[in-house]
Amino acid sequence: MYSFMGGGLFCAIIGNILIVVSTATDYWMQYRLSGSYAHQGLWRYCMANKCYMQTASIAYWNATRAFMILSGMACFAGIMRFSRSFAAGIMLLISTLFVLLAMAINTGVTLSFLGKRFGDWRFSWSYILGWVAMLMTFFAGIFYMCAHRLYESRRVVGSR
Image 1 (cartoon, rainbow, N blue to C red):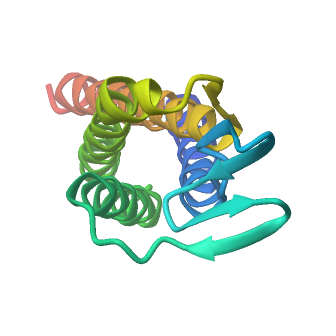
Image 2: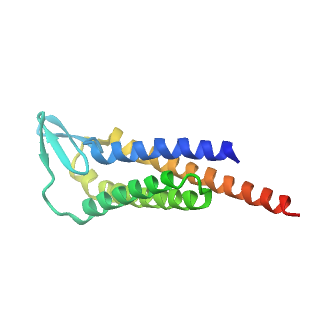
């Protein structure tokens, strides 16, 4: 049971760090614009070594930001509840769902709209960290659910 909880806690901490880094950094997408390279994140876009805040209130950006923030909060709540394996597992799986929604929204809009607008573009490392964070929170949730299942089976056997 404790090895599952340890693995879950490790994955949850790494996942939460990756969520924060992915959300805060400006490298979700890189592209060539007017002969120079530019990159953008959820909060800022940068061109010619100068960064600007994303001031336009575009629904998919707001949804991606909101789901990433909610994911980080749910993951943090799962870490805080690590001694209660079932509650921690549920919170971490909710965090996984939020990251999945954020990444799916961003991917869908980028591929259908922005990808056609910019010829020479690619997803960058902040975006990739978001997907890795989703995997880490998923495995953390699974580890915690396995720990809960193991604890319950031992409790039932011990009460006979």
